[in-house]
Image 1 (spheres, rainbow, N blue to C red):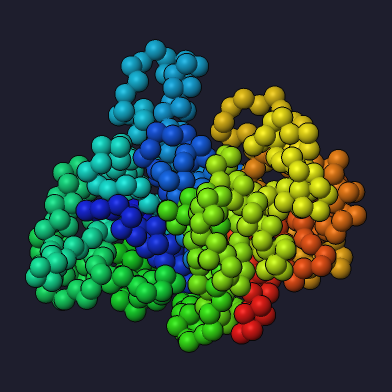
Image 2: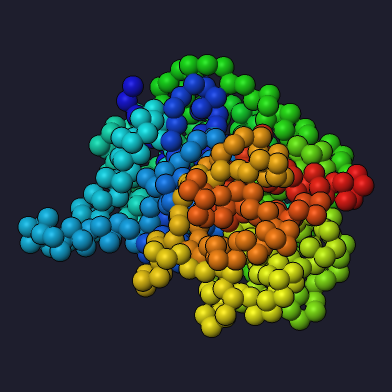
Length: 536
């Protein structure tokens, strides 16, 4: 079968829902028996999001092979349940870095290097890698940003060229756009959509399908107007009202006939009948009235909740399975240092401390871990959350008052968290950490082993600093359990407290492997313990 391509572009505003739409369509096509793959093209010039501030980019989503990618890849994996690889995401920075390296090596034989054809050829080469490496029958490709952005022009030009190379019958352009509402009149306006399609057509691309997003019901007459002015078939303008439940999006698209519409336009016939019943049940379970448990999420970037996208979704997955609603109280760790935000902590049935980098707000995270330890509040620490739990343990139970991580205090005499030996000579900021999938052996009789129910697991990592083994024996003597270790026993992966309802923390990021219908065991354990504490 010739590989088919679905290209997703965005119009009017950013964050319009291209990623979720692509993920949902991928699910519909997978349910129809096709092997699908997904790719995100990011127009920014950074080589990857690994060194970007979460305030700028949101969450950095890590894949099995250690690729640091855009958070939309989390949507792809959670909806489609495919394990993606580094070919599924690339940036303008990577494209230019590769092209310049080729030029320095003499690959272009002294020619002048230009956007067309050299940059566009490199973009097309990377797009075709997905097909080669995955054997996908249908590739869904999302272009980041909004049509009209100067940064995305080379990507759109590359898609135009690629369409001509693989054949128009093998490509479909899906334009996801926004229909704003005028507050004074309550009137939905289509003009911005018309302008965004005009901008797209000016570079030689006409959308085959328009997904018209809005916060309120879109009348049939508006869809007809969009079809008329944008030269799109009437049945190819799909009104998509904002869903109250994220995981309802595939159901809305299915009920609107989008799955069959895509196959018809690509000249394909479904290989199997889609079974959306598990997703319908999931949405029903989300909507059922349930008791609420309160969780305090103590982070450094809580002003932008997208910085914790996968953590938030993993909590929702575990909440559904535990038949509770989770009410997240967002606590800035810096506030705790200023004696603010403690009311959220004290009213919480559980505390979660996620990952992060840098010294800002660290003492606040340590205080949150101390409160959970001293007051027997269920606690889950993720990466940095494990490290601050260890620092608090050393200070509070080993009486090592200056205990710290050498990341935050290079002069500390008690670096209970320290740099890996093979990283001490590293100077580059990007791509030098322990990244991607690593094995973890679970120790019998521990909470972690009970939650997982298996002897060994593979989890995704993103860090450079590790637990310092020089302190391991003393920690164990005072009640710390090292319940997950690397196969050689040298690296601490999971820690937990003996005499505590649930104080567990991992050096890895379990949130990246949680799925709507397969919640992660460590999150399951947290909310199970929170439910007990809340008496629900």
